[in-house]
Amino acid sequence: MEIKITDANVISNFGKPYVIAEIGANHNGDMDLAKKMIEIAAKAGADCVKFQSWSVNSVFSKKVYEDNYFLNDDYRDREDIDLKEIVEKYAISEDQLIEMKKYCDDQKIDCLSTPFSKREVDFLIDELGASFIKVASMDLNNYPLLEYFAKKNVPMIISTGLNELYEIDKAIKTIEETGNNKIIILHCVSIYPPENNQVNLKRISTLQQMYPDYPVGFSDHSLGSALPIASIALGAAVIEKHFTFDKDMDGWDHKVSADEQELIDICAGVKKVYESMGTSRVSAVEDSKRRTEFKRSLIITKDMKKGEKIKASDLSAKRPGSGLKPEMFDFVVGRTLSKDVTSDSILNLDDLL
Image 1 (cartoon, rainbow, N blue to C red):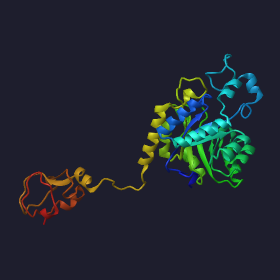
Image 2: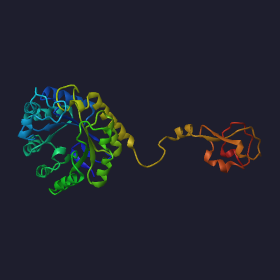
Image 3: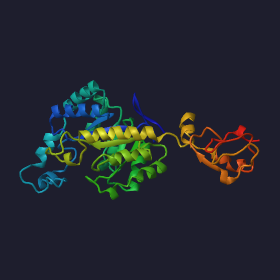
């Protein structure tokens, strides 16, 4: 099934991959930095940059702020920083998103942001004009919110990290029950970063088989560029990858994000693998000239006279393939020569009676 997410982009399994460069909160509240990152993503060949539209009130409860509990190990138990202050600093406002959307338009790259509340999705669809939305893994079993998102009736890219199969299935049914059948499913492991044996790329194929009506992609949190590139060979329709201007910056996602060169490598690698997938039909793609140059012909291994019969020991095969093919070996053995031939001569049909 194909799902159109923008005027220029149609998503399908084994189709042209759509690469989302996830800025998230890696702008650190600095819109000048965000613009630099948009430029980097566009130059690297990404199709879209994505922000996250959370606020102080839309994700964490009061208890999390009171405990000052950071999910990221680099920040946990530090007393010199305050979670609430960091969230306030790194949140992107509606006015800032409007500014970033305009800048993305100038750079000819799509702009997206993940909503975490009804107000945030209302803004993205009704005011920012987003043509599709991304649902975070954490909200896949938040069925009332998921239903509200789905009723916007725009394509929905849903991440499946943190969720069991029954939760994924119920989420898809929740969306479908609103009449929205424009769903793109992302295999995701919400570990930052996962070990190689935790990534389970084969789940892409499982999700494709279970939900044949919907494209399946890969939201990657591994280090480096290899795994998102590899997923294209499994037909991944969308690649989502966090990226950063500098892995050593303060902030919770920088260390596990792709840097500029890694993003370039991912975009180039994804394109290369997609273009190399070709067709499942088995046939020679080399032209006749190359096939002739590289293949062999039957040759006579010694000087022979007209009228002599050819024995198996009189034959070998060497390049080029301009004469009788080696597959004609049994046909040639026992045949009579129509002319004198010299050793190492390529054998042709008119050499035989």
